[in-house]
Image (cartoon, rainbow, N blue to C red):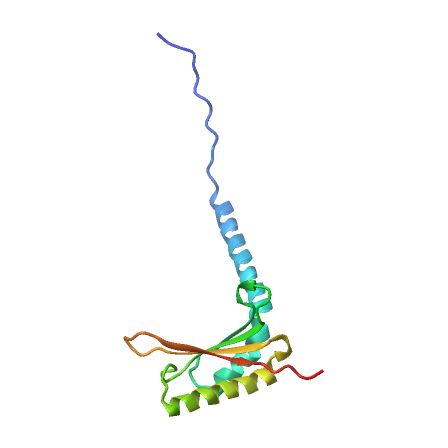
Length: 150
C-alpha cells in the first residue's frame, strides 16, 4: 500500500567557503581591534614607567598597572609594579633587605617622574624570583604615596 506522503524539502544549510573565510577575517579584525583598544586605554599610560624600570633593572620584566582592588569602593587607588629579581625577596638577610629597599626607593623615584602619582594613594611593588625547579619566591611591599599639601 502506497501513501502520498511526501518528505519535506530540505533546505541547504551549507555555508560557502568564501563566506566562511570572510567571517574568519572579520572575527580576526574585530578581535585585534579590541585588543589594540584595550592596550591603548589600559596599558599605554604605564608604558613610560615600565620602559624605564626595564632599563634600570636588567632582566626584571616589569609590569605596571593601576587602579582599585576588584573595583571596591573605599579601597585606595594603587599603582602596582611587578618585577623579577635575582634574589629571594622573602629573605630577611640584611643585604637582601637593603637591595629591596633600594629597588622600592628607585621605583618610587621613577614613578614620580614617569607616571601621574596624583591619582594614586599607594605603591605596591611585587618582587618575585623563579629559581630553577623550585617554588616561586614572592613578596609584595606597599608604600604610601604622600599627597602634596594643598
